[in-house]
Each structure stands twice: as structure tokens, then as C-alpha cells.
Length: 148
Image (cartoon, rainbow, N blue to C red; front, side, top):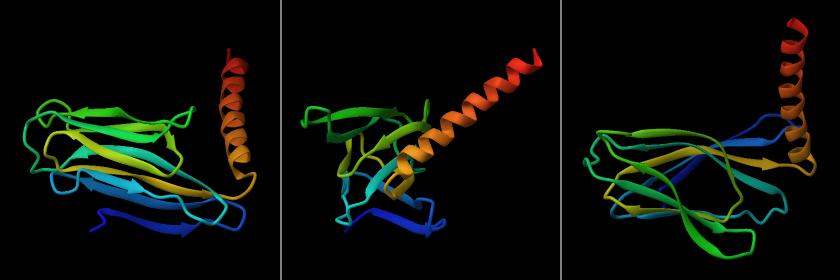
């Protein structure tokens, strides 16, 4: 059984396609693989939230991501350590992964829920989106400087 899901919606012809994505990690399914698509477009997985399910025991739950690093090796890297009585949920910002990527429950019985977005970018959309974000940040700084 595949515990991953996503819902897709095209924003427009000129903008990326964003899809709500999520998976469940637990004793029965300790890993979730987000596969790459064979459509010659660039895809990203934007991980936003990792949270424990209501029935998770008060034990340490460690979630790791296994993806190719810069030298092409696969090494799982822990990205969250959750415990229901201390830290049952985290919100992430800026964690962008290129499929294929595997999420692994290294420690704990779960359930642990991961959610975020899958984004399909057209050629050039990555740099345009990044440039827009930078110009918005710079524009906010200029407004602050002008008010001083």
C-alpha cells in the first residue's frame, strides 16, 4: 500500500503546478519514497510540516531524509526528532528536495505525518521564482531604509 498522496492544481500556463503532498510513517510502513517523474521537467518536494499522530506514544520519533548528496551518495540525514509530550509538531521553511527522495522513520513507532507540496516547474520557472522572491525581500528592505 502506498501511504503517499497528492492533489494537483494547475495555477496557470506560466506558473508552476503545485500539488498538496503527504505521507504517513509508522511501524508497518517505516519509509515513504517520492519518485521522480519521467516528463523532463524539474520537480521539487517542499516539506512543510512533520507531526505526530494523536495515537503516538510518548517516545522519541526520529525522521530522516535519504536523498543523493552533492557527491551522489545516499546517506540518511535526520531532519526531525519529535516526542508527543515535548515537541509533537514542527513547521519547516526552505526544505526543498529533488526527487527521488525517501523519508524514513528511524526511531519510534509513529504514526508520523509529513506534509508539503510537490511542485513541477517549467524551464526557467525556477530562476524566475527565485528572482521574484529576492526582489520582494530587497524591496521590503528599501522601504524600511526610506522610512528611517
